[in-house]
Length: 189
Image (cartoon, rainbow, N blue to C red; front, side, top):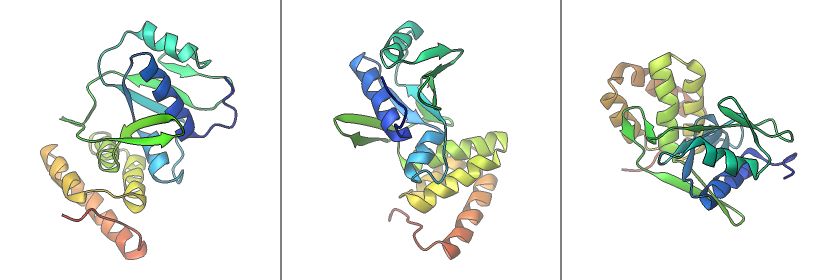
């Protein structure tokens, strides 16, 4: 399969579709979701798919082989694309909570399943909260600028994670963005 000029979202939809056809349910997470929700203002070259239920590695390897991907350690690589693909073990969660909403984006006849913008922000904040990853904080802010994010839900989740103080850092950064970015959208309560 020629993947030379395939975009991240097209590739993710192709992989999601091929997995589904092989009885493997996956959901895209991580930086690739940030890329999609920000129209590539942040560009990720890692496609992290979380398995909805446990699946043997042989089955994943077989599905990826039909797309021309070869296993390389924990990743899959294709000679025509710079994107690396990884499959993460279930459960599909952000921090200590299961993911509540899975979004679907149509790409032709294919359907890409991915974290909602709100869960994408939680996912990025988890990296900031637990590993002090400032780049992940910046990514969470980008998603808030470009997509509809339920900030009340992010706050509730953050407090549940024991990260009220760290949420304050995020909230302050978002407030600063609100002053300079008029298109910051929030879901109304």
